[in-house]
Image 1 (spheres, one colour):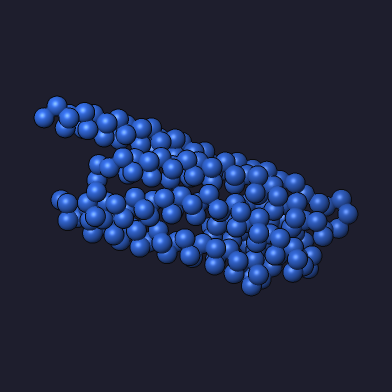
Image 2: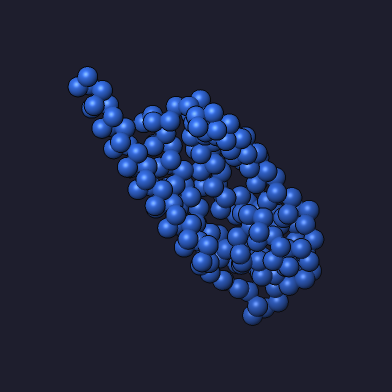
Length: 182
């Protein structure tokens, strides 16, 4: 079983490393190189762009694209830090350092950043709706904040992982106490 844990953890460490690189490149590419049709289609929502793109065709200037890319990158920053934390956790597990205090700490940090990411998404979407609609005709500027079911589910899963991390810390403490009696 230890071999499976090590192999799977090493694969997941590599995958999380790739996402740390791919997410910012994807966000920047979609905003700076994507067509208006692509951005309006909702396709971008599945590629780490918060919901809230509400511009009229022909009103998306290069500066709005750059500013929107910045908002999207900031909205993804907690996710990138979370991936960094989970990458380190998988590296520990890949070395079969399974019950270390650092593992619980990394899991707790990962979960906290994931919760932060989910909380930030509606606000980032609101900021994007304001920025992308600022060149719309008068009376058609928009501020739209929405909370998706996936945001709520992510918050719940993240909080559950924080509790599990506390349980792991307590298990580590008890293990250390037991070792001191021997």
